[in-house]
Image 1 (cartoon, rainbow over the protein chains, first blue to last red):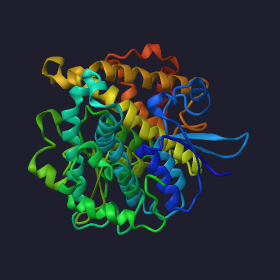
Image 2 (image 1 turned 90 degrees about the vertical axis):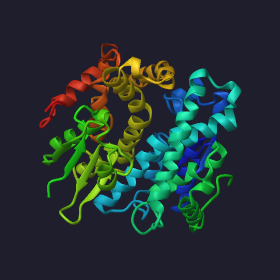
Image 3 (image 1 turned 45 degrees about the vertical axis):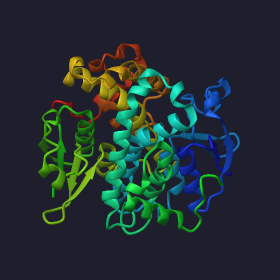
Length: 208
Length: 208
């Protein structure tokens, strides 16, 4: 049956799954939750979808045998299995994962978290610990974007000569970096690469 | 040629690569750096090993065609490719990655960072922002260990009926959690699982 994406439409982690599904030609159903209203912390969500209370979760299988896959990049991997987005070559496959792990460790906690705090929480509503973390996250986000820009200088894609899952998962929050007070204009190679991803056949924007 | 691991021997992220190599029967050479002395930020390291200034990096290939793979979990994936540690089944493979991404996002930044701050930096040398982050990281680390304990209750391994790469990468910092002021005794299913990993044929301890 059609996989079901449990998501918050404003989350880049959810968008990357929709983008992977679109670019591999796989339909998915969508169920929306508002994380700011605690809709992923209800007893029903914790018992039935994800005991960790987080989205996205990709639900795959069929009635009576549904299975639930948390972690955005794991859901993208499941969708992209067997497609050209995951190279078969041993080293290239590991390189794709290298960038996917880097995205979750060095990019998302800075770029995505600052975007969420600034755009959806609001500086006044942040805790003291969150406010104290802003300068470090901003510097780390700038370092992440600069590293991407250096890597992409003279290269069209993150791994090899064509688009892979590494490009899609990095695209999701990078193309929203301005919303987190980063200046994408400072990273020209990143900007060119964003345009290449957006020109891929089957691409869908975040708002779709 | 034999892969070369650029590492800091006290890092759990480096240990998980040695553990994967040992359990898959692959010899690796080791080159040690002390991150506290800035040895991964020298011009030679940045130019030749990793422009991001981080370890671990796995160097694979041969003279004249060396390739460099940062990100601990990507290096483990490269080593485990073709072994039973990575299930061929589409959903199980994605589940292994689900736990590997979760490890880097929800476990390592809490358990490993607190261990590093407490054991290797020292509370007096922390910045104000780091000190402000301690309670949040401690609570998130406890939540991570509790989630592991719930998942392992009634299960021997994280995915399926046998050990996978998910178990190895989660083992690395979990078995050191006491050094970060967590109480492993509070998580009995985790403790039983730690013993199962340590009993795997070919297992090597961190100090080896």
